[in-house]
Image 1 (cartoon, each protein chain N blue to C red):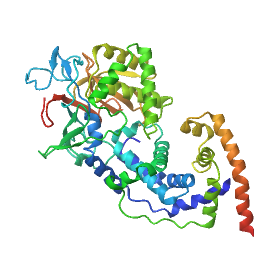
Image 2 (image 1 turned 90 degrees about the vertical axis):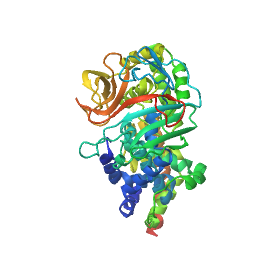
Image 3 (image 1 turned 135 degrees about the horizontal axis):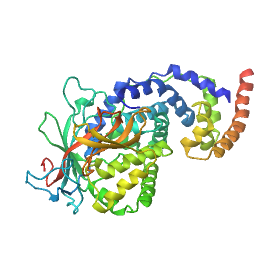
Length: 164
Length: 304
């Protein structure tokens, strides 16, 4: 990303999928949108320094996730002093399927959930996930394997319920 | 696990805010924090020796050469905590039409030419900063917010200079460690592996050599250049011009913009004083930044 145009293009291309990934990780769509918007505001504010970021989308995801994780700590300060995006976005309606999937994900531990989301919603390979999380690829594979094992019955249960 | 795909339906239902709304928010925050991105660059100017003469607060000798024009600059003594570091910073604005130039703008903000900061002052202890916007004589002074990667007060940068090893190998290790420390301390995930690590190391060495306005002490200066040469992929381009049209040597490596775009710094060809830098050098410096003037003054608004 070398300039405003490419950051704008990145916004158009990645906003939706980043929100989706954050939603899958944190379980709250409004929080997910807020975190992703905050990440883009920070990227814009960084100016040319953002051009030094090796993987802009991974950077945005990390900043958004950190914002979401830390929001409880500085919410008061943020609300009082930090300009936020004006207007209210209309949140999409969640279907029972959406809710069921998010609930199933919430049953996973945070490490497993993150790996599963990066693999199946961000479509990253295990090597890319390892690079983004700073853990060995073997660790990613084992977390992914355990996550899949734990997730499958929960999703199966959902399907059983749907059939009934 | 393919059930996760059901979530993808949601992306089509999202109504994201307009990109320009986010730009407006970023701009408002920047103004509130005294144009943070520009103050970041302008931060931390130090006492220097230029052309063999000490360039000190209140110095009025017009014949004294300035950083970028004269020979190697080095630190002599610490400024007082209540003094101010001043930097004039030139940035050719890519959004500017015609022959106009933008100072201290730049970045990803498409309206950066609106933020035309001529000059910035940062209190040595980092308590406050001040700036003037081009076309407006008013001096804006406010609390400084240190919230950016590589953002140091002059005091902090002098401490960093003092703490760094002088052996080039150990210095390179210390620079990598410094990058990791910042990366862990801040919520910004700079790529610190492979090319990302090397590019960020070149960037940090540029900051240590003068991007923040401060220049390193003599016993650190040579090791910094030796360390720069040790970073894999570093290239040197001689007989070039910096973004302000001054004779320069370019030192950098392939950056993130494109396969042929070099990211790095311009140095004075004679004494290797840091002149400025760019993220996109392709045989010509059409964008980037140049330090035009700097010094320590007693009051915000004073010029050296």
